[in-house]
Amino acid sequence: MTETFQGRVIAGRGDAESIAIQVLNFIVVDVDRIIQFLNITGLQPETIRASARSSQFLLGVLEYVAKDDDLLKAIDHELKIRPAAILAAIVHLSPEPEEKPLDKKVASTPQLPRRNLFQ
Image (cartoon, rainbow, N blue to C red; front, side, top):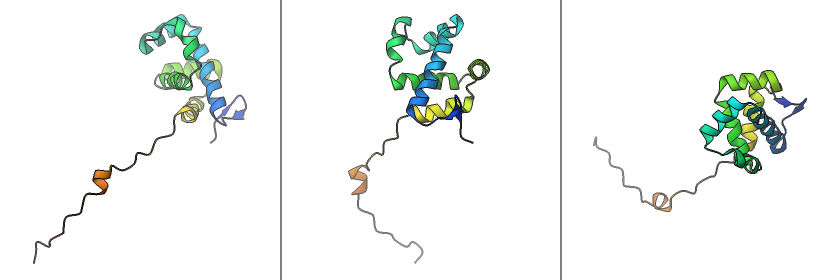
């Protein structure tokens, strides 16, 4: 099933960032939630606004929420953002995995000759 947000399919980075900003606002308006968020992330209240401009920060907000079942339930109840939509947003904000080239030493190591031990 394709997850939707505000009646439309989560199509990409823009929708994912929109979800993350709404989730961040949900955290910020509650004193207990923001204190816990700041304690866990090590951020200061005055740095949140500047940090929220970063896709990596917004990804971190969604990952933080995804680890807390009670917070996911509260977001689902209050904002009507389903946990699956949050997970889909995480996928859209996650960087593409980098393919590492093979180590040249490993690739150029000559193969040892095989011997049949049962002759």
